[in-house]
Amino acid sequence: MNAHLPQLGDWTSAEELLAGQEKQLALTLSWAARSPFYAQRFGSGPTPADPADLAGLELTSKQDLRDNYPFGLLAVERERLATYHESSGTAGQPTPSYYTAEDWQDLAERFARKHVGITPADTLLVRTPYALLLTGHLAHAAARLNGATVVPGDNRSLATPCSRIVRALHDLEVTLTWSMPTECLLWAAGARAAGYEPGRDFPALRALFVGGEPLSPARRSRISRLWGVPVVEEYGSTETGTLAGECPAGRLHLWADRARFEVYDPATGRCAPEGSGQLVVTTLFREAMPLVRYNLEDTVEVSYEECPCGWQLPTVTVLGRSAFGFPVGGRTVTQHRLEELVFGLPDEDEVLFWRARAEPDVLRVEIEAAPDRAAGAADRLDRAIRDRLGVPTRVTALPPGGLLPTELLRAMPDVVKPRGLFGPDEDWDKALLYQ
Image 1: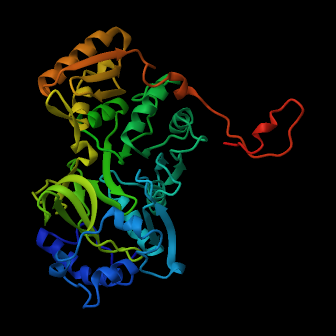
Image 2 (image 1 turned 135 degrees about the vertical axis):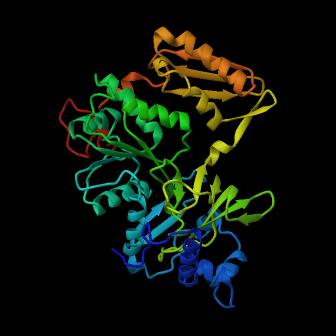
């Protein structure tokens, strides 16, 4: 373990936490100055070295990372790099990210900082992409750092359809999982399609680690009741690794001992230590690609109010893109508020999947519901939307499989390997079309 990395309990107050940040900041900025991008941004004067210098620097944007693809932010020799990654953004341009082996120690430790610990007795199913993203590799490294067995389920592979994941969860006695929250609902439907009951037939399971998409309290609670285990949330990105994790009191805390955080108000152009706005990150222990005042562009609420856990770290509520909505009937509808209402329906309605279209004059919503409760579920949601959101709506309840075809949950497609020689009755047009 790298002795220089702070550990929970090394500070006892917000003041000590900030003092630790400032102690590391000068070294971080000197690392950043080695990269072509920050060398140019800092200019020919003295290298920034303290919080006052930091406050005067321009924010680093996602576009800056894309414009300096692939190695414009590299601050070490190429020989020292351990991994290269790109984010899953939809901008059409790669957003690069890279780490040394020492950087990976920091990454893995932060991911494992959950109030439900990872132990050698655990089997962790990783159900997020490996590919060029960081997320799958991050959970894998954290599990191995703590001695756990890893099941690399991936999330973009034809080799691991939902049915195979359900089989692995059951047969391998998986104790922990890492996925997006939506995956937990898909597994539940897949388990039932296979004849299992999520909260009964997976007794080894003890927690679901989730991240990668905004999660409303109602959906989180529904997933937890469905599986009968805690849902443990975290927040981060491929560019930064884990930035926040959940404490025993159920609140999400920013790892402010490993990074410095600000909240940016796009309307005024000002940054503050807390409040509402976009999260800005300055990494403190990342040498390969230090990020200085990097604007993640995620909408958050940050607070330094005391938390019962005693961690002495700021709390964060991540709204992400769900903070933005669409106009309907003169009001704005956001996914976060709508999701609260959908998953506020009684469990007996068996609503796991839904979709909505925001039109100028009406909000159209479709849900899957138990056949004997479909009419009631649609009526309950219709009334909740009209009462709580104040918009005209039209809710339609579909039978199970209406939104998510059941055959997709049961499917086990073949994974074809490349070959050149075929028999007389085989389709040789597939010689190169393997998948």
